[in-house]
Image 1 (cartoon, rainbow, N blue to C red):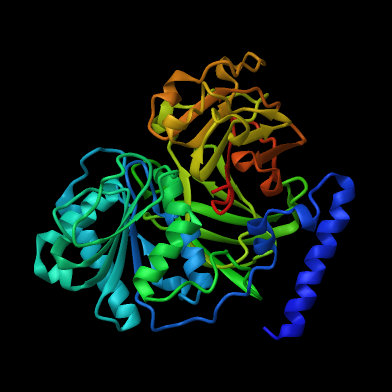
Image 2: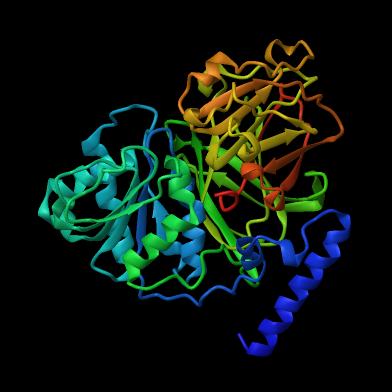
Length: 456
């Protein structure tokens, strides 16, 4: 970018920050340097087709969208978006069928190699997915030969790099002596397993390890022009396809979450595996995905503006009789809401706790979201449909599920919007509000998926 434009952009940011100081916000002189750096983040690098494709393997109770923010960071640094993909498998069981998963990894690597004309891919895997990746690479020399690098995030400790594949082991909280001999080991002792996967610090290590260079930016930069949205609608947590079904994409009013007049952007008849896209969209707009399955409630998914093309979207739904936690109480008088984020919710860290305010009431506390719970999904509904809220204790059927919590919150359904405000790690400058319609829970489900690139 020409120097004159850089100076103009910086001055505009400083002027905006100073103007905000009169309303209680920090001015530029008192702003955190990282926040100011985000405000003046550089534009994305141009696509670089020489980059090796990346395949991500999630851990237990995970899905492909856990790598979404890192995929967006890679794309912001020039990786073509269609060269970054994820393998979904049945992550609901502690020991999934290894041979079946290995065969699927074989097929996905073959697809990526045929797509790109390369002879190897890079493999990134988390926790239990990293255990699978280690076993995969050690299973045959032929498999190892098709993988150039392995990034193991919160994974196992093999005796050395599996299959002699160059390995980066990323470690977070826990035993500080963990390492893989012969591998590059990076440590982030303050990060739990999901935050470790989504953090900018981990991205820097991955990017330098895979490319030999420092990243151009660690931000998810806005993409100019139209963007493309693609992914899968899956039955969570088995991650099997949610098709056949109908998927509708709507542009919504960001101040209400309601569909705009003539807001239907497009629709897709989902195949059995639930894949969709790419769908053409606007990176500055707010969207709703609606998954419509005959005889079941419509499932509405809301997102913050995507900013750039996203091919790792996962619409996590379920059949009514197969819902995690046994199913939420439904009633025409109440809205049931699930809020998802890719880094853990913490409700017991004092001033550094996450705040998740729904209609103005913070629903997180030390009882339902202690740091040790590693909560990623918050289920909010009126238990027993008694019209009362009780946040003193978590809902047992949800709290006993890994990475999930539940709270008894009465949200009246009707012709109104629900304001959901998140203050990640208590940092007010990262606060964001998203509005969703108050759909009645006997006919509609509501899921809000928040970004992963704040608060960590």
